Image (cartoon, rainbow, N blue to C red; front, top):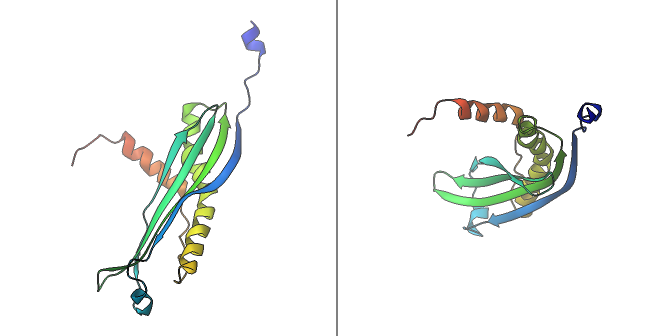
Length: 155
């Protein structure tokens, strides 16, 4: 009887810490690359990772690797790898409720910081700012869920 009298604990979400976990810049063909006039081809894959810590705390890390190539010369102008992370305290959510928080809400919080780090570092390296386009993390999350539920095929 006492179980029915106890109200369910309320879900809670808080940001404990936001930080740059890793940051690297490579300009393998400096100083000659600064004399190039051609516009580089930019490649920037992005992924996220979630690591449970303890007591309802989770580390979420967004990683982007920005590679600027001069395609006609097959030369890398610069390479930036940035990992923006956050520690989030999340309590009283089911696993089903937790997944979109970690896969959508947390990346949405981290992404503006990642964009700023990448843009700032590219300028400090002597190049034009690299502006990462906005990302719909909810759409990405839904695509990943669909891929996970689709029948597994081996390539």
